[in-house]
Image (tube, rainbow, N blue to C red; front, top):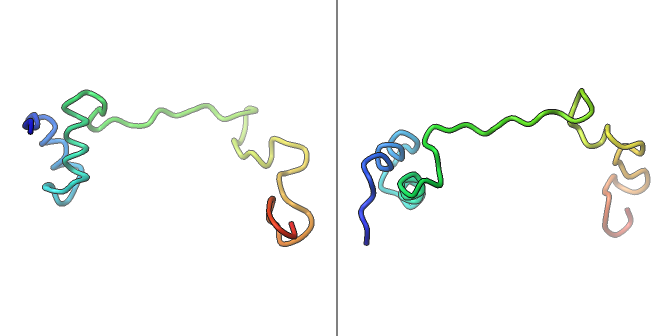
Length: 77
């Protein structure tokens, strides 16, 4: 079993309350291998149609089922 790098261990200790856990070790190994950037933030995407990115507003029908209980698919929709 390979040892984790110090950078990965430190990042996992900062991110998780309990360090010696399966989730923390998996995060630390991802940092060590370069798949995860510690402290990285998700990139923001631009909203569609210059306003909101709500898919119900993009289409004419609104995306709401008119009959039944409001479900789009399934029995009695």
